[in-house]
Length: 393
Picture 1 (cartoon, helix red, strand yellow):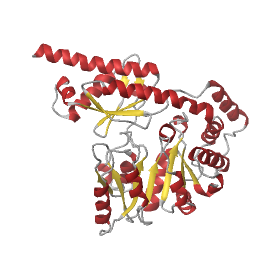
Picture 2 (spheres, helix red, strand yellow; picture 1 turned 180 degrees about the horizontal axis):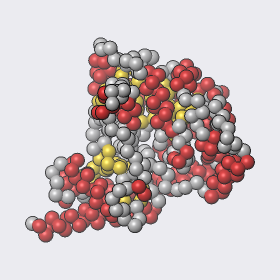
Picture 3 (tube, one colour; picture 1 turned 30 degrees about the vertical axis):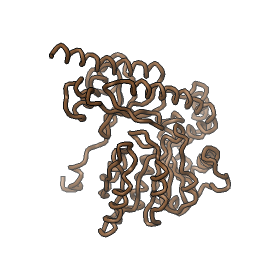
Picture 4 (cartoon, one colour; picture 1 turned 90 degrees about the vertical axis):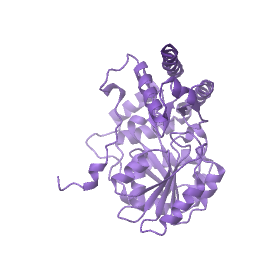
């Protein structure tokens, strides 16, 4: 069809099928540990509160509050409290809201690079949506590698920026996740120092989707620097993945630019109500964090003790693993990619759904029962293959 952009043929639609919609036969119990959601739903009492709000306070025939003022004020109060910054340093001019963080990422890309104004820099592996959204907008993505610890190769990143500066597409935005997904590592002091020295012509985008689990934030930098923005979401710790609410905090000039690109009524009334209710009950909802971190510690220890797996420390609600050389042998493969693909399929056949991404497997922390089943399934699929190898030899 000649009216379509020619480059769209080279792009693939983002696939995120719900476990219940999988085409292949699924096991009776399928633990969805692939999207880093909270394994715990909203408490029934909070759901009842939301239901009453929909009945009594939301007119379905009316558009949402386009100013989003009440939710922005609630976000300000929470951000100041959790980020330990003076409340007077935050105002509604520092906040923008999006239909999930994805919409905010897209707005940042449009504000900085669209129309041949520049390119973005990412360090792989990282959250895939930065490159996916950039590609849909025809924006050039410059990628650099990470070290064995998954710290950004700063020399390579700086070199990429300097080289891009000599072209017609200089780097206008650097995207970092803190802690990184899928690898789980928080930004080091060296990485933060490098981000702080970026010139004002480059926007530092720090994605803090997992802030509540890590406790690490760059909120103070976002409020004191004109070229810094922090992105967060309600989809993880606040248990509102179904409602798709994200927010960004930055200098008023950055926020004003993003607000120009925000679609009218981008956040449904019920989603705004859900986010406000979650913030009003933040103490109760975030009480799940210590148990999740305890489960993460146990999972990391169990995986570290496994001779066929390699695991790294994590500051998020997930862990990241690859196969050791012995693990590759156990699965009768010679390459990491083939081994991970095989392990992914074997685990799914046993009822554990995880994410195969970034050259490894990302396993979300679930409930205690889900985590135990995951470990048991790992032992079973690797053990079965070990037995097969012995018989075959």
